[in-house]
Image (cartoon, rainbow, N blue to C red; front, side, top):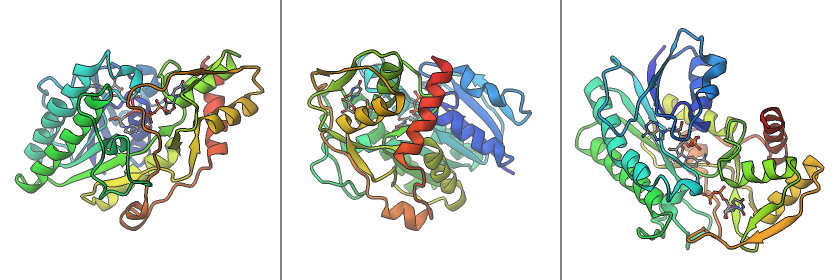
Length: 310
Ligand code: NAD
Ligand code: UDP
């Protein structure tokens, strides 16, 4: 069995990854400063003797947590509502945080995993997006802090791979949803579900025709775990290639929640990509992975979660 550090392990994806690693019998050290995470996300595993949870800002210098076999760098605010209030913190965790994690991996001869994002493709001019597409990002735009932080992370990871011979992997995660997203997270699925359950207006940005491809969290975590097994360098896209627009998403959620909410149309936020859909051929080949959970089933499970926490 192996020992891992998971930065951002109290967050939405990080905590599901921690569950999976513990379930597989591994030892896990979580480093998280709870800027967007919740300690309660780890409550079901809090008593597991293989889990250590440390309050730490990973953009600040790291303490030693002993020799590890792998580091999953998951820490970063990820919701567009945080891109202004947490702009500097996002740039720091994507640069300094990534640097500290890579130096730790180098020191211990550990494998390093970078949680990157479909946002490195920006507002894409190529559709769907394969890993060879170089992207269309405005470094000065509101989303630039997140996009460029992740692009910088990918460059730094590649530098450590190329020059320092650290074993590294990069995943580009497309929109993922599920239980443990914060109800005030700001991303579209928790927003629409909480609005629908409260019978409050469903806030559609723009005309609602912009598309995303939504992956259920269990599928994504299975794919991330396969990175540890196969250790491909990447970058590799992980996401569910079924594309849908935000009006369809709203209508599915309204129907499933029997909600009386009405749609309200708000301006499209600056730089909001009009379309996004992954090519997942590399993941199928190099990770032997493809998503299994339908949007309908994933949304049912997510609605049940929000009903239990609202
Ligand atoms: P999240 O906000 O739920 O989790 C992020 C976690 O990182 C939180 O627990 C937060 O407290 C922690 N964190 C942030 N900055 C930190 C710092 N400086 N020091 C220590 N901890 C810090 O978001 P998420 O959706 O779970 O995203 C996890 C990772 O996956 C992020 O790197 C994000 O960019 C990436 N990602 C997520 C998605 C998605 O759809 N969920 C898509 C693309 C990429
Ligand atoms: N969105 C929306 N209403 C909301 C929140 C988001 O219409 O209340 C839109 C948002 O403008 C974007 C899409 O839903 O076009 C996905 O947004 P999210 O913040 O979930 O992720 P991202 O834009 O980073 O893909």
